[in-house]
Amino acid sequence: MSHLCFSPSLHRNKLKSFYIFIHRETSCRLRFGAHSKWIGAMDTDEYLVPVNKFSDMKDVLNAVGDEGINILSFHSQRARPRFDVMK
Image 1 (cartoon, helix red, strand yellow):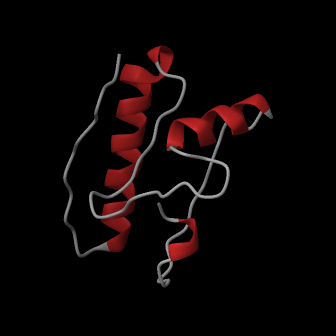
Image 2 (cartoon, one colour):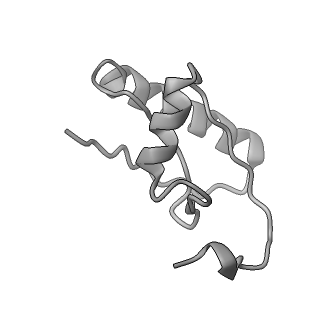
């Protein structure tokens, strides 16, 4: 079963936005954490693109889970598309 926690927040005050993020993440974790293997939090304008041996994000999560990793952190950066890894 899949669940989606959605709580839009557009605030100019960065500290206020940070506390709202913590509240949203905690609320989602408390409601669905016991029923979930992974929980993700990202903005609606962000996306993850698996590359190399991975065909989708489920493959990535399974691979790192097998290694005992239970927290993943990604960072954003401006980059040119890598057409050599795109289908």
